[in-house]
Length: 141
Image (cartoon, rainbow, N blue to C red; front, side):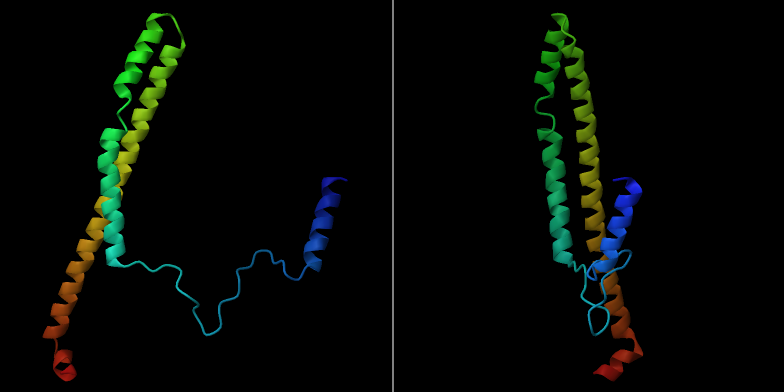
């Protein structure tokens, strides 16, 4: 069977199958906007930021624990004339680069989330201060 024949058969099968829809999102739930896809609270953001910081701290040490032994093994292999010594040294260099990238990403996540929590709290305090100082506050009391 050629590609064109298979494609025609697949289209015909899709057309006869009422449950299959192409290029279409599912219909929204009755009553409007549907359910929320994502809900995230400040305590959750803070916990994620703390986990990212902890991972950052651990990676700085745990990601390098084999560096000395690997470098020594690569040197020994190279001195004995094995090409795998250079390959092992290159693998270690790539590993160290990946660990540095991951440590930097964890720091970015941790700092960004901590900043978001702090900034949001300051914004909330300012809004509360503005609201209580406004004329609206007198009408609500």
